[in-house]
Length: 224
Image 1 (tube, rainbow, N blue to C red):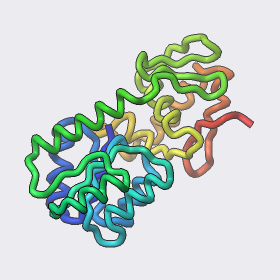
Image 2: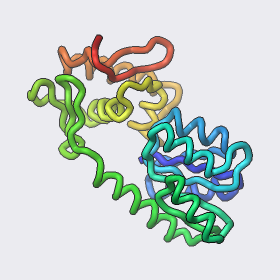
Image 3: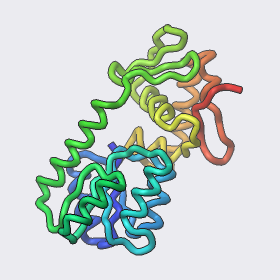
């Protein structure tokens, strides 16, 4: 699970990052509103922890733009404020939860687990593109109703491409999602190419849906 922390108080951001990593989440930090918004719009996250008061764009502006772009990623808003109107505004803009600083670590972790569980419960089990489909509950891939036997890494790559359908994803993003903290920056992008090659071989005619975008990465889209 990938979590983005957008918080300008670096010590707090890094502490939250370490706490989440201790719980086996893949956590990244952005220390201002502009970089936080850019990451949220260009990368795939399962949850965002978003401070309200940020340099550049504030948390309200960020969540407003995320929802305007159609991104339904769960968002927990953090703020030192405790006025009811700020909480109401955050929820009205599209936040899923709201936590006032200072907060207890167990409470933050409980809210993270709750939102991630809720997201997984509402996610569709079956994802399809033309004749190619995956069942995210059973972790199975099918082409024209025929089950394709994939390794866990191959399935994870295909699932990640499905979640980013019609969007270019870089080799680095794939490596971070599939290998997490075990990723070696100097070798992993080559590993991604090898796994993609093997995945295409197993998909047979279904490989046409995985397109290489030269210099950028890969994209899952309807074959032209």
